[in-house]
Image 1 (cartoon, rainbow, N blue to C red):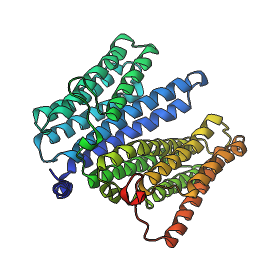
Image 2: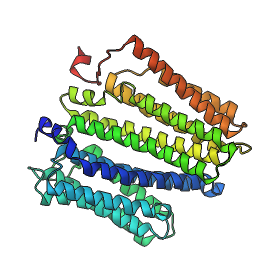
Image 3: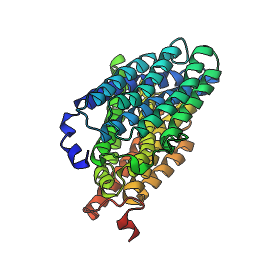
Image 4: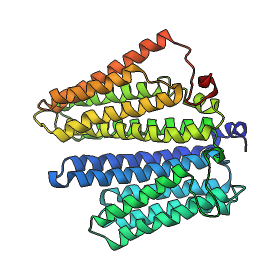
Length: 398
């Protein structure tokens, strides 16, 4: 199938929209778990945060792999539809088990994740979607290998830190397989050039996931505000909503908006699509952390000084700007000074805000993001016709 043929099928991708709704639920569960992590006892907070990060990385990889498949194959094929249903149901079950994935629901989480990872390439093989069959066979082999530590950690270590070690190893194998192209003796590996992705579609999928993450922060803010509709929660709720709008504006300014054109402008769309996989992971983590920080402040707008909370409140926007800077470099082969200044301002403000109410910290972070957005607007007026120029593109080499 050609990229041009796929363009005509973009309207028949309702299944992906349904999958995105499942991920709204999954991200909400991640955020809720993070709120609990940050309000638990200090001696266990770091392990809890590490566990939550691992679960988020597992969900992110599942979504990325699904986006790759739907960008490479006809969504009207029965195998692709079955795969989407498999991922939807699997992610829903994983989200249900998230709060207790390292407890008594660990077996369900691990079995479901392994079933999704094994099921996707298996369905592609049975549906003969991949003409050469090698790509799916390689992915299936790597999924089978990583399944061992996933299941061993769940079944053999119900109440032990060894589960986290084994699951970290398993997730490292899964990510390594994607990065290296699932090399298998006798079958070789999948080169980036072999990923026949529709640039327009994969770019839209990234953009849609960012909207999901931003929508989740609004949902978290609304739930926290609705829990106790009191005057002292009005200001932090307004700051939280404004911050979400600013992140939306900053992401979709230029680089986010023209990502589709940038991916299609290079000979190998999959190369930039895979590279932005890392950038968008940073952006998503930053958005989620920002939302969690604001939820904490809505619950405790004044009189609660906590250095870890401050790290989340300022670290979330910092991660967002770092990921957005990386995306900008991938699209335009440069980074706007506003991103760097914003990161430096957030770092410098931490020294001043450590002993101040958390509402001042969220307001400061929002002010920094407002400055970045204002810089972008000014630059847009001066350079209205800027074109994408991904690193390594023909136009840049000239």
